[in-house]
Length: 193
Image 1 (cartoon, rainbow, N blue to C red):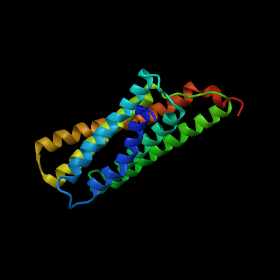
Image 2: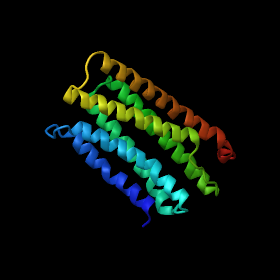
Image 3: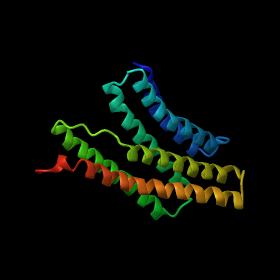
């Protein structure tokens, strides 16, 4: 097994560890540790792809595992931020509905394309969506860890919150935009259906 695939697998292994650190209240600085681990896991998403392309080590195993690792990490992040209910519950429901609908639609389009011998690669808007989601989730987890430890208060928390909410809103916009873009760019796949 090559290094990029090992990095991808490490991201999958980190998911339950991140969740445990964040959710078990008796762990000192658990939420902060989980946030740092999430940050590390998010950066491995770019590291494994970069190394695979640079060293000509792109494999079918990597193509299979990488999107699974990405989805598991994002789903874990969403579940984690729901715990602290920093935002109203309906906002979390909207976030989950948009992200899951996007993944389902794009994966379905890819399946139809594969039956026609067409490969739909990830594009820049999808990658930007992932980066923004990761940043927003890290920011929300940091706000949750601040609830546990009270490092910042008042104006500092307000400023951090507004930045995180802005990035999160932009990430959700990119979820919608990238979905529309996938279907627009690949509309020929659905012709004749």
